[in-house]
Length: 490
Image (cartoon, rainbow, N blue to C red; front, side, top):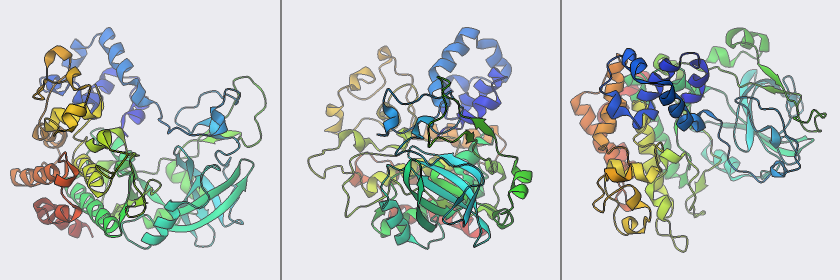
């Protein structure tokens, strides 16, 4: 997820500052060739008219709205109650039979063991809450699944199989809780500071100290190596599922008043039906705004490491499951997803597909954005813009290729495709140039060469040509820069 939603609110009173931010973050893929020529915010102010701003915000506005996965809950019916919009919250219509658990602050779960103290966020089929564990005297995170989710999930089985591992967010407890909306599977997890996505969004430039970034990349690679060694594919690797650790002193703040004093009181928003009628049973009276207990990416210290890889809801055993649908973010999907043969195992999503996603994520950890974007067109278009022509038979099977490219896969300007970059040009813009603009340490030429070679091995079009996780671990960049940085931070 882009850091835009947070800054969309924070900077809405200064649209020129907001535009300058979005231009040199991931969204600048549209215009970075132009922005390279801009030397000051004054130039932007002079050149962006009201009409240009309106057009720009109209085209990026979908990125500022919460995105939800499709669900099959009764809330999708035309007769379901409608509620007044509340910014940055779960779908209120999901508080229905088969939907979310209607929690409020102070509620106790599992026979009183866990007391709810704050909201941490939500997904398409679950909400996540911060709770105090009265038995262990520490804070925990509880993921409460919707009632129409399976009570016995593969996620729980996989987490139990992986327990314990220092780089995997641990499942501490699992129980079923009954609400007016049904039976809910509750997963008690280690609590965390915040995800890497959230941490990046708190810093204007979205960058990490280079030593910390190397160490986090090393942690992530070792976590994936462990998973693949267990024949498990995570299925949704991205910075939003990489979590920083919560310092011990904060983890022991089981008194809500201490927590609120440090991070602020919970924000409550009343839930109101559009038609003014009373709320149905199973709908909470208020929404609790997600807590902000994170840290800016440029302020991360070794205290917050090693990372924890989280959210195994899309994970599966490669030997038991044949996966043909990608559940990761659009800008991270591998190209084979568009050419899967559902009749046989050719281009089945497996370990090589995860290597592609891992490569994109490592690129984003080191820089301010990833190598590909869905802005201005489809992700496949951008992949070809960066990596060149698709191999046959994919190229001939891609029916819309003529809308963007000539047959030799060069940009045809008559079709309106915006630009064409090499992987090194994307690197220069999102890694070293971004660091230079923010007065942060850059990768030297030797490190840059080794880093790009590793990423290039991970982003080969054909799955059979891609690096394995062992190849990544043994790569020059991991051995000379990433692993030594990890050792320094331990």
